[in-house]
Image 1 (spheres, rainbow, N blue to C red):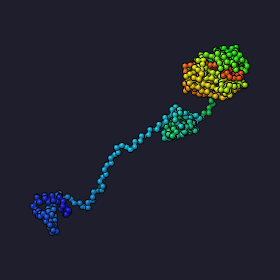
Image 2 (cartoon, helix red, strand yellow; image 1 turned 90 degrees about the horizontal axis):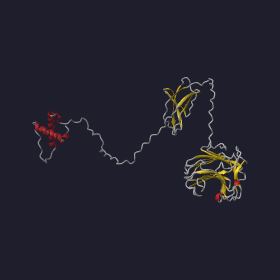
Image 3 (tube, rainbow, N blue to C red; image 1 turned 30 degrees about the vertical axis):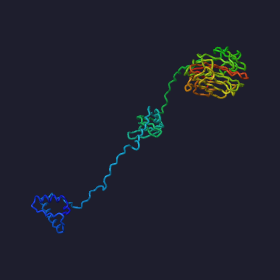
Image 4 (tube, rainbow, N blue to C red; image 1 turned 180 degrees about the horizontal axis):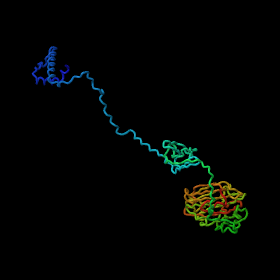
Length: 453
């Protein structure tokens, strides 16, 4: 008997049941506060053991089964479980955005492969942003291999199994291969050794297209006066201008000459400038307006002793003047004191009085070729907007200027003038010659005389 059961409530309960249902004398209760001796304890223990034997016999399930071995304490943590940690109310860092998927280059289009001299020759349309291409070859369903990179012609191929299948893909700067094209089948054939077939007789040449023609030409082959081809002459004296057979431009027989000297002022009441020049109308000059695209070409001869001598002043030999007859011209070609070829360009608002142009540009195009004919070609896109207007100049066959400029005054057109218009302080006689002048809508319409690049 486990003596610890003496203290258990279960034994006490069983004992009460047994005393109430069986004729077993209960042990005498000791008086309260009585001292229990060893003899008393042993006597009481014997009574309880006898009682237990009776109860076990009559009520086998009244007592718990005793363990057969030492009872191990239940496994488990010796410390109480930790309190669950409260999740943070807010993340300490924002979630990382997923990286966008990489754009894969599309498959090249128009992919073709043909057999040429026992080689596969491929072609395709280029793919934007591709750095090179990869070609893949297949001869059987199991065999698929990269055979070339960017090269569009294969080495000599075997004729044992002449069926080949090819596809192509573009590769970007990071080496990523894009989408493959659909496969193309080609049958490789041996180089032909047959004689080339007889070529048919050449077809009759198509009739030559007429050469582009200028819109208007001013030339002096007819001789006589400068009017026509020009509309007006601006000069103080009649001997300041004319047509001469001296030193004609190659391919012509005559040219116009113009001269000025100190004192040649006073034409039409003007003062302070020298004039010997011709002009034409706005209509004959092309009815220029905003956005007009126009080409001009002509040659000018400067004698070997040409020397503009008034420092800080000008000698203009060709100009496009705005509609009103006052103010600074839109474009003029002139010589400075060092005989440099200069071009002034003006536009935007203004064009009514000297110095009122909204935009002004001056360009130095290099030395004038003295003692020679100087060939000029000029391309204009006329505009009062400096981002839309254009001037390009070729001198002696070389392009010496190409600039976006404002070259038209708002609300005005232009007319052409040639000759000499200069400051009045010179101490020399100046003479130049002009030959054939023309304008048209394209370069081809004005080229050919002179022959420019």
